[in-house]
Image 1: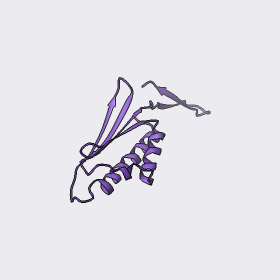
Image 2: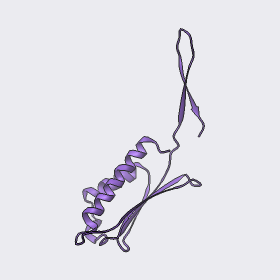
Image 3: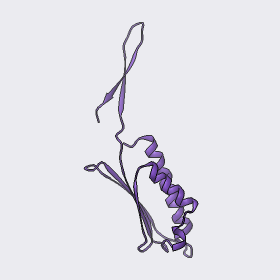
Image 4: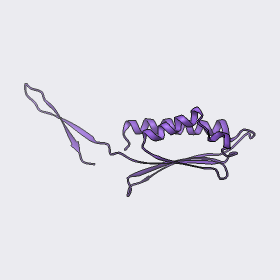
Length: 124
């Protein structure tokens, strides 16, 4: 399970990448294909997000530092990830990052006048 900050950054990143596809990939077409893939590699404790389209591909002018790309790079940095961009039959963006373990806790209460609650970590 992802920690909350990773989940939020990942959701915002997917949203921004799909928005980029819709704005730029299909300029002169009425339809296209966007694929979102999210894989876990437990042996390396890594996750890989891939967003690809079959659009016109990124142009030299889209390699600049527009707001969308700045947001994407910032979110990738928050995830401490390594991002790659490919421009073959459309655009494919892949982000590889390490999944932090989520600590799970259970609460126990003791009866009595002190009414103490104790958190115990569950090994994951």
